[in-house]
Image (cartoon, rainbow, N blue to C red; front, side, top):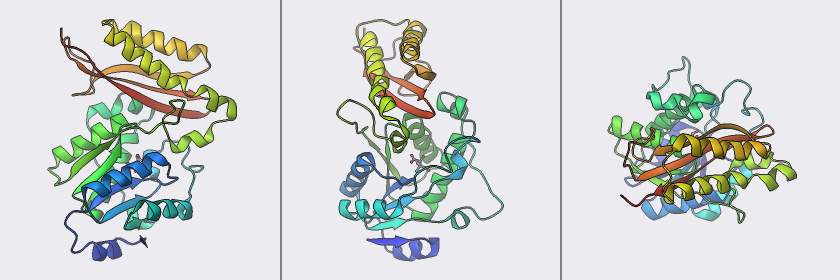
Length: 278
Ligand code: PAF
């Protein structure tokens, strides 16, 4: 496995590659990332993983400075998983002045975007740049970041990029907590509480499956349940899988999404729901 920091070197290494499979990351890798690399490896070779903590997707007061930088440990994990190239550019290599941004659709201002203005613009900008650097045939993203995955699929479609997006299932700890690099910020008491986010979304999914359709009430009850246990809730929302907008009457492929904070740690999760058509 090669560790590459420069775009020119990456281009040279990939000059003859036709089926490159790509996993963009911000490092501090966990089993969720490893599963994405494995999924990518099934799709194509060589497998490239990028590690870049992207300042554009962090808002003022967020955790850009304290986001864990663990390059050596990440490289060990990637080598053990069969990645061929790790691309870890520095800030100047990624963003020569003057900065230019990718425009994103209005959905980027909803859900996570409502609390994190500019976040998805930052994600779309770095991912488009990484796509241009790596020129992959396949690119893998986790379903835990459901809105991110949706927006990036839209980017690929809108700009006719010759890339197949692979969606990786959310990997969870035994108690249901979705793996996230930010779980490491949780105190022991917060870690014990954290699985409630997934449990609450599963309860929402069960209400929907049982036939309830009063979405506003279901969402409010779920948010109140989290609030009672010390969470500061950004949103609980039931959306259409097809549009990520509030579902139309009769839509059956739904997704329940939530973002909420325990102390200073913001966690997100989601549960897909397939309803029986009436
Ligand atoms: O999901 C992430 O880790 C990041 O948002 C991504 C896609 C690597 C862009 O920085």
